Image 1 (cartoon, rainbow, N blue to C red):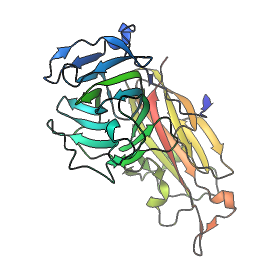
Image 2: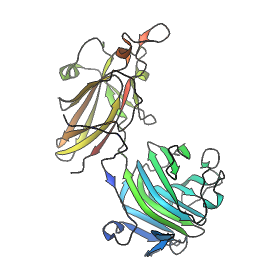
Image 3: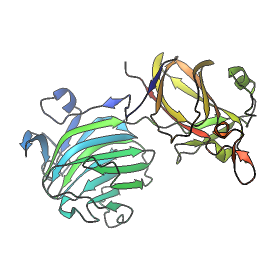
Image 4: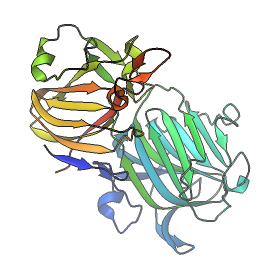
Length: 354
């Protein structure tokens, strides 16, 4: 069993970009365009002691990375802007994407940060506004500040100057694309971008097949899973936690969950996960994890990580999971009945970089 305890936000597929012209091997994936959508070249420069690139909103309006599509990601950068600078993501083309931008001239007001969807080129800022789509933060025109934008399972979070609490949190509006390229954009004046880093966040697995509920006062192994004839498919995309209590009227047992994962070759993957109670994990019939938590902790998407050696073709991933009832002895009293209060898990899967 290969297991790694994750103590901080570590993503297996760390993808780092530099907007420095000294790093041609990474800059080659970025292309700049004018406001007339004409390809242009960017020149590296220094602004207030930071090496950066400048977008003036006209001759150099956007810079886009077309090498990779992102669904869930975290981007960090330093920015100094005269009027308006931001990040476009889930980019389908130059006329359709999601857009998060900053107005440094309105720092300290509810218009400092704004999110809008760009449909067919429309900058619909009057349609999406405070208190949901705009937020306050302390930024100033043409002064450097640090921005972090995180998108995970339709949730957008924006952090300014390394705050622990997000300045803006919202649920993204539905568009016709769930993933796409990333671009940087300036409008109505100069913007400077430096130290741009993008991390891909593994997609949370929400589509599973679950068994009927079984008694929790016995041990189970993979042979019991193979005997199960009835399976129910679940896929609650809006909830990254697989909350098993929602599927059973009296949640107090053990459940098997399974998922088939296809691999185009023999290759290792990383499974990030956390859970309540007791959990066994099997890959293609072999046990790869077995642990019981004897206390209650808040779940963390990246608390645990194991390496799964996938074979070419279809691979069967199975969880056998019990909730927290055993922590309380016979269960926690829920209005006259003893049961699980917390019963579920969260899991993400990503190909391992060799």
